[in-house]
Amino acid sequence: MAECPQCQSDADLRLQRRDGDPGYLCEKCGTWVQFGAVTPTVPTRSRAQAHRDSPGLWPEDFPLEPDGKVTEGLVVFSKSGAIEGRMTGGRQRCNSISCPGWFVAITWESGQAMKVCSQGFHYDPKTKVTRITGGGEISGRFVSPPPLGVDPLPKEEWPARATLTKRKGWRISNGNGSAG
Image (cartoon, rainbow, N blue to C red):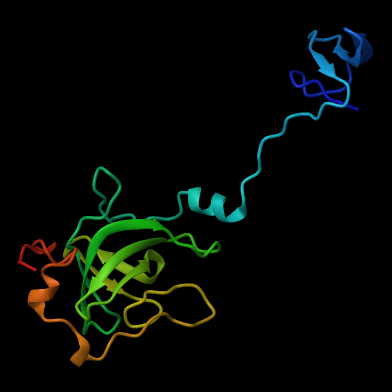
C-alpha cells in the first residue's frame, strides 16, 4: 500500500477513483496519492561520501586561512627531523573512512609532493612548525596496517634549492619569516 507523502502514514488513506484512475485519498490532509505510486525517499549517500562530508578532527591550534586553506609555506619536518617540507595550502578529508584526520598538501625538499594525514603529525603553535609523528619518514600515514607510505628519495636525486623556490610552498617566505 502507498503512504501519504504529507502525513508519512497510510493510516488515513482510503481507496478511491479520481478521473477514472484508482488511487488513495488521505482523509487527514486531503492529499491524493495515485495507485501504484512509489513514495518518494531521501536519497542515501554512500559511506565514503558521508565520510568526506563529515567535519573530522582538525588539530585545535592549527591555523587556517579564511578560505579554509592552510597557510602556504609553513615548515614541516620529517619523522627524524632530517628532511624539511613546506605546506602548499591544500587540505581535504583523509580518504580512510575510519580516520578522523585531514590530508594536508606538502612539498618536501626531496622534491616529493604528497598529502600527509593530520593524525600523523603534530603542530606547535609557538614555533609554527609541524613534525611528522606517525607512519613513515615523510608520509605521516596513520591508518593501519602498513604500508607506511612513500620513502624519501635518495639525496642525490633531490632538486636544487633554487628549483624548489619555484614550487608551491617554497616560493614564498616560510612560516618562520625566512625566504624559501
